[in-house]
Length: 319
Image (cartoon, rainbow, N blue to C red):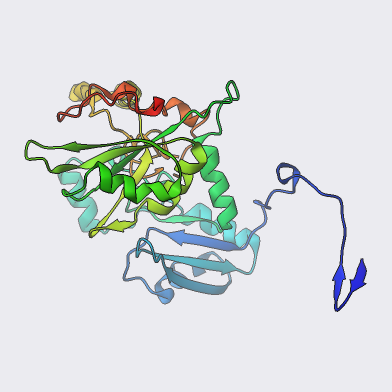
């Protein structure tokens, strides 16, 4: 090193980002926790985690975008943190009464929409705390960077739901255009011209789509938390549902028809992207999406058969 002014300057060989040391995912003490009730406080979180080892600190926060709580729990020993993840990740937080009600209604966990991490709304998320850069990189991996067979951007189609009935294509475009080049936008309307609550936004690149999902998924717009995830072709959704319900499905075969709008692996209930997530994000954030978004970026072209009067989407990804 060399002393320059009041600072010591170090000079070393440049290393490409792709070649730099990856984060240590085996030795960690700090955990990230989410998907717990809004009325939980730090004492409740500490009570849940302290049986697994000595806790050095607990911090409770609220996401300014979604208004949902999350927390960080730091253990003294890495092994204790790992035990907590193993014991508590995906823990069902429903009360006995809620479980009984779900049973009476014949609800199956397989039917629940999933978030980016492949979890239902009642399942606790516990994992190694990641930096923002790590999380964004993981999202890019799930979207896929393309097969490398062509230099032409493949385009990425996002499915957006929980829209207000007053939403139209212009307002949807305005919501998403800060994140990149939009190739096309479409919303579904009823016979009165009101939005049915869902639409599609096609971005030019996976990076742009990643940014859009990161910023807009669960963002509250007109009092409703948006769902933003990868759009899934109708054929892909039908095949996935067929495979899901085929074993001992009995009379459930008819579910294979779906609505053509599932969200892809890991994105919630068939969220063509990752169901309630990036959610494909069964993986935006549960289950990888391989290749250029697991083949789920075919735009709107494959969705012409959607029910509800949705017109053929004029190959949204091709424009």
